[in-house]
Length: 421
Image (tube, rainbow, N blue to C red; front, side, top):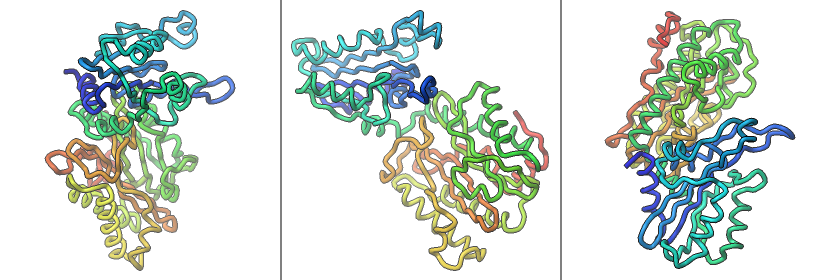
């Protein structure tokens, strides 16, 4: 069975008997009077089909004696293609999705009518339908998923409506070998992008220039999408977690925090590194960096399946508190909250903050981040070191080990200014 076929098979196993699922890819959202935001596919739809095209729908019917899967994509439109480019042909959609039954979008309503109106058809009596009820999904230009489901309830009052999101979430939390390979590739390319960016990381350059160098490298090497907006923050700016400005000129003694990542086949890398502009860790900045690095490595060593992200967070706080007390950066345990104010981890996958249940014990196949940090605005120092890890055989495997974080490795890297591309 194909990767996508296996995912759909697992979803069907979780669905009730005599049920169907209707999952939309979504449509572009309006940015202004005459402009749309770039289309972002509903990742739950993409996870099951591999299709990134708007106005597409997956229909799965789990009938009395068989399961049928249908895909609907935009019909050919000469006018649309003149304005916004070509659409997938039915054969192309079939090849990408590994779904045999591919039809045009305008046939969707008639197929739904067959499934839910005719109780003597091949499927038997279908009495429940799953929808992805994520509130931001738009089904049409002026129709949200909420509005669509309200109309569905009126048309089919005897059909129960169930949210499919929890079922897909549970599948997406456990990564297949293919998914891990995609994440690893995204991380490797991100590492190359970081190395290329560091060539220009010198006094006098602006933060936004470094961000654009990273972004441009990805575009020029595989036209890579960003996992999220690139963050480059120097000095005190690094104490703002999602620092938006990036307008500061970098100084020789600054530490620069990078939080960035590329995508591979839809899967995200999420890496944070903090490097000294002059190539040498020194003074309070070195002490803070060592404290964060020790915590990063300690959490990775500590992490085991069966623990929760809350357990990892508690361990991170314990280590950071101990480090800061030792360095006399804080006076009492509770002071750590002033300088460490985010979580140490989140799941990673098609979304950078991938759908998950944070309270669920970690399992083999989970991919998460480990990203402790310390932020001292009074010293003009913010440090975060973030790795991506996979749980395998009960332990954490570091997927981003090739991206320098040890002090000696970073100083050697910054000194050479020669990096492999």
